[in-house]
Length: 524
Image (cartoon, rainbow, N blue to C red; front, side, top):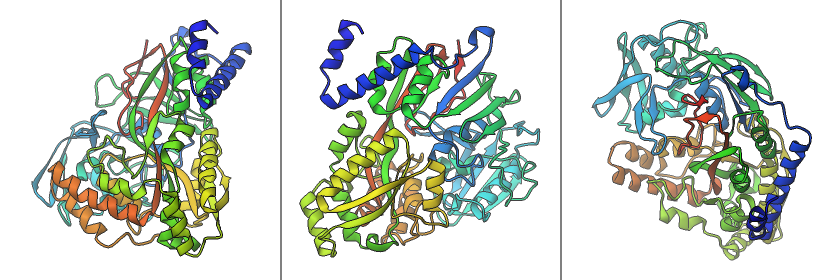
């Protein structure tokens, strides 16, 4: 190690210094054994290899339940509406244009000549089939996304008209998410209850080749893609590597070109590795606790609020993210236009008030909870820090860890296992959708299916009746205050994007949603 690097590391606080030295030791170990298998770029191969942080829960956009699915889904599906990476402002996708001729009608004008990977047409009939499937099929997990849609009509071969139950200015951005990902009706046998979770057929840049569960998802270039120059590579291979240290070693050794969503603690390591670049920026990704408010002590709002108030979020960010990120006092970061200072005050650290609430609720002698989480190193560290903080109010428990798709399915699905799940909210392009999905009574992400506070639905609707951002901010501020007072989730920390890339990678950028897209990436 050169003297400049040694001085930089010695200047760090003790915790971060230990983390950095540990990481460097891991990289040195890789170097000493020759590293992981390198890419054959020199042989003219044009395959983009990416380290992914979780196995998908499903490759069918209507049936999946994990926010980490999106990065896989974007490879195989386009959306009706797209968004600008820096602002999430809507822009054309499969729909070349859209309009609201009157407040309760949305008209989509589709691109001509777009086909699915199986050669069938992505026309108005296919879009109607998908939107009806997403909002009504029993297997759909995204019915809530399209709750404002009453009917979908085919106006002509390239025009779809959505009749709404109420004005909904959030709908274009909702159609930039799962609800706007179009699946081939032919691949589904024209049956909306059929699932293509293992064999996706969309219109996206790469057509599906294979999925080795827990290991790799492979796609090959879709030559008939409607966008010129997309994709930028002949194929894509997504390697499932939940451990962040393994992901960093993979990109440093040349096994992959991109390792996304590395730990914030690894940022200083990436910056000091000569052959790597870093792509970074704020995101909507929030580390948080999902609360089953229908179980035991968690039915009492005083207990839920005590759990939140006893978390020193700034100390949590320092310990788990090396201060790369920010404390999360609601389900949005401070940089977001809809952030509410009034809502943030409801979750400010106050251990004395937390103790008082526990005493008042009858748990002054302590409380043991059934906790669920994930087994990767970063998740385990967050669990340890949280339990240490909760010990101040007598709350204890042990996290039962399993992979993301497995534990999320058990917690949110029919089994309803666990009191709390430490996971994340990976964000949605429109904030009203974030709150509707997290807190609506029948939402997949509301594990107890408990009713949100009175007035919640009305405030959500008011935020969707206007395109004026200031008016929307007021209505969404009311929503955020309601749900933070009820504490049906417990936000902890905002994650910042930390992606490591090799020198061959061109045209890869971070986005505010925090879910990378690789459509434009080229290798040179």
